[in-house]
Image (tube, rainbow, N blue to C red; front, side, top):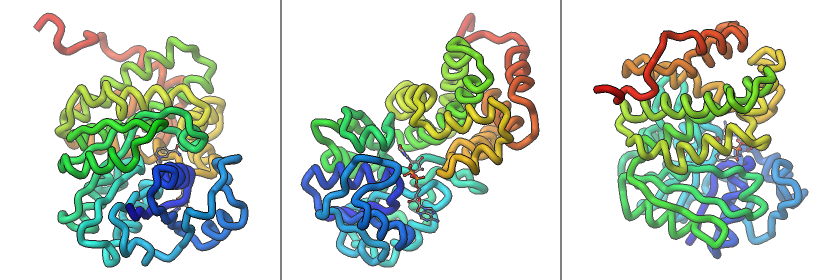
Length: 333
Ligand SMILES: NC(=O)c1ccc[n+]([C@@H]2O[C@H](COP(=O)([O-])OP(=O)(O)OC[C@H]3O[C@@H](n4cnc5c(N)ncnc54)[C@H](O)[C@@H]3O)[C@@H](O)[C@H]2O)c1
């Protein structure tokens, strides 16, 4: 199959190499010609050191490359999903299927990324979200990885499963697109908090608590938005939460560690030099939670620290001293 991957960051590159290995004809599009030229010249992506880019992978910055592709993989940072989708629109083959692999919620509109893509390219093209615990660095070096392909259109979810699946990359399918996309976006906020906790020198107890209660509030928002609770216990929820909160590959966690150690949040984000999706997702999650009227105390505390000047220690104390609660709203009903 002819496939174009749009976005040559770590994730776009790792997926383009996987698809090439699976026998497809793959083009990797870069936002800037300099980026494409550097990949061509160095034969590797600086964020995936030691992972060779074979000459069979076509590298370009010409957007017309999407013309005859049956499948488009959109892998830019979330803030650039709308502009990238808008650029491809006039070149799209009528039957092309679009796969969104970015993680986030759009700033200002709080739309999920497949909703953003649908607004730009129209409702005729099937759209699939592919997500799960998957660091580019590890997919790049071929370690076994398992993800989920989500679409309202069963045929397209299964097509994406077929195209990406290999002995080292297993793909499940689901129709819960909202659950999968919110899981992907919201776990980055909790990963920032887990990093902050590590940076403060708190222990495993604190991090496990943030992850567990974080997952509860992620699922609460997800359900209110039409997703299923069980999706949050799956690969795109719990799976991605574990990988992001515990690994040093996670830039959200590393950024949180810097904040916990005293770097002002805005500076910590700048110093990462890569997109820190959780920093933006926190505000969007809070906006969504306020809109649908659900409680997200950890996300709200994250917002106070990230944008409101609260100290992380104060925010933690506020979380610890909230009014007494039952663990599950379903107890003693
Ligand atoms: N890295 C991972 O392990 C991983 C895994 C799963 C999902 N993701 C998601 O994939 C997305 C991309 O992440 P990444 O790690 O590849 O990012 P990255 O930081 O490695 O690279 C970002 C890429 O975006 C490009 N870019 C910058 N501005 C742009 C614009 N205005 N329009 C189009 N492209 C632009 C840059 O040129 C660069 O190639 C994010 O949403 C991320 O959450 C990443």
